[in-house]
Amino acid sequence: MVRISEFQIKDVVNISDGKKLGNISDIEINLDSGRIESIIISATGKLLGFFGKEDEVVIPWNQIIKIGEDVILVRHSGSQYTQQQLGTPKD
Image (cartoon, rainbow, N blue to C red; front, top):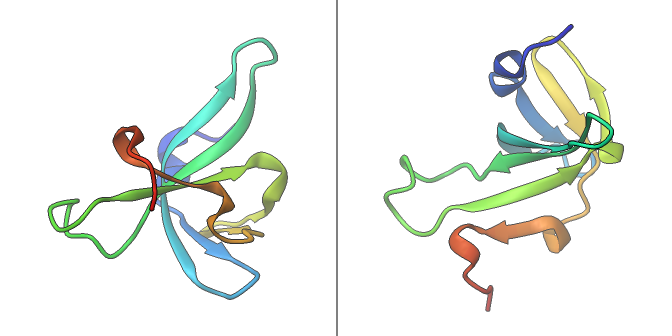
């Protein structure tokens, strides 16, 4: 069994380009099935969210390739799963 806190300390890396996407900030769970539907990653590069708007990247569970001891490898295709916080539309 794995705890959510153990997921949150792992770096999430996109195998498509080798870039670090960030760390898991939240997960979406299907309450009917009890399965994880997706992971939500807070974007890196912001100082505690003070400078600029902080984006989130939503990665569906089926795009997770491997969960290792230190990293989670995902196949993320780009901005199609990016959402801004607070529901503000993207330009």
